[in-house]
Image (cartoon, rainbow, N blue to C red; front, side, top):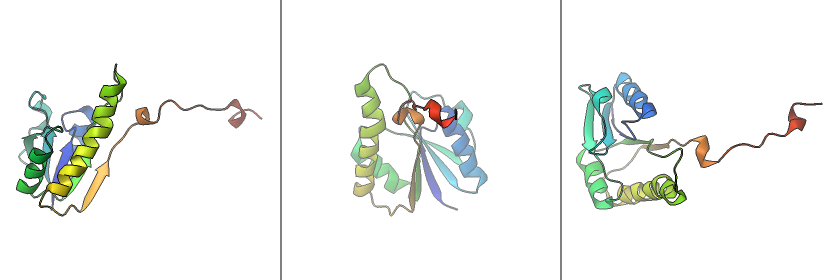
Length: 132
């Protein structure tokens, strides 16, 4: 049994990840914004922690405090009106998380990075693949 941090826990996919973490016998730490709706995260083995990706030292302290062994980084945007916001959430927040890891007192066993097709953009499919 290990301590697992799930970022983006209050989102559609995040809730399923949290449930799978506890179904596999781990303790789940659901990293959410203070304004997040956490009604779907009510379980004795899901611990809500308020998380701020802009506060590297605060994240490092939380990682150490809860002795996090695994991280499933599921926080991200699939669309945004502004490219700068998309970059901030999907790239800078990951950089901040990695910096927090380096400042923390933990030895992480595994980090799983969840992304989306939105990071790559729409695929271009050639007709020649299907028509011969």
